[in-house]
Image 1 (tube, rainbow, N blue to C red):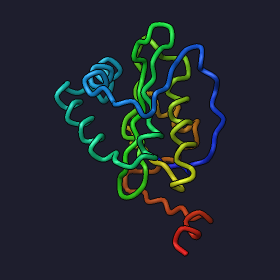
Image 2 (cartoon, rainbow, N blue to C red; image 1 turned 90 degrees about the vertical axis):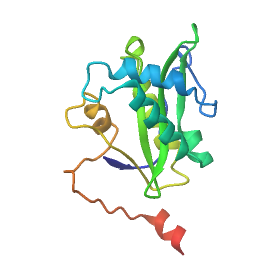
Image 3 (cartoon, rainbow, N blue to C red; image 1 turned 120 degrees about the horizontal axis):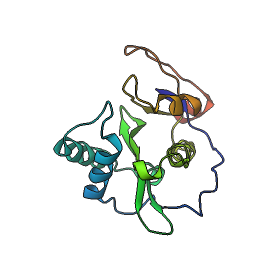
Amino acid sequence: MIRPTESLALPDLSDFVRVDPDERKPLRAIVALKKAAYRGGLDEDAPEAYLKDTFYCFEHQRRQELNHASSIVFQEATNEFAGYCLVSLWEELPLIYDVAVHPDFRRHGLGRYMLRRAIGALEPFFPVIRLFVTAGNEAEHLYAGLGFLSGDEYAHLVYENDYEKERTT
């Protein structure tokens, strides 16, 4: 799925969460949260696969703007790790590499918040942002509601705007 980047208003979740985009990412905590978030779903896998996959993402997240667009979210009152959104680079464009919300913190708008934050943070640097989703994943409606467009597995979207023209001249 793909959509243009743009500045977006963020809902005020300050009573509920603390977002630390540049905090050193707690690899083991992310893997544990991913295991809890994906349990029983289409993308459930072994913890070793989650560890390898998350480490791979960190290896491809070297640019500061990608790190800043990522989110590590904590519940403010208890300091519990509630969710994360990791942004990396794939084929020279940003990719929502992984986004997950702990089951105890779902239905509070955290996923929408983290995705909107990433879309807006990358607007000065990239014209589009992408993500991959397994067909049938219950988050598909969230992505579509945020303006991500899908196509069949072989679809190719060409997006040109003034940003790209200015960058190449």
